[in-house]
Amino acid sequence: MPKLLWFRQDRDETAILDTLAAMAAQHGYTNRAGPKHGAGNVAELMAAIATGEVKLLLLPDEQQTLAAEFLRQSAADCAANVPLADALTAIADSLQLSLL
Image (cartoon, rainbow, N blue to C red):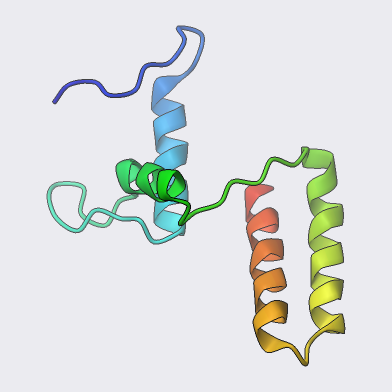
């Protein structure tokens, strides 16, 4: 299979692809057949980003915990609005996962 992604020489390609595969699996984008059945599918994750199914949030590391705490408090404050509270909690969860 041809190489579809090219990284600068100072990048650890294997580590990057392993991290992307783990992120893909974490969000439910997994291979459904083949030798890597059940493993994270980077191509599906990239397609989901490209189509807007998955949103990227650029936030400095030092702000992630603060933002997650604020979102959790906001979710608790608007608990009567279940869809909004669930959305805020999901965003907070994603921020916390990115810190692991």
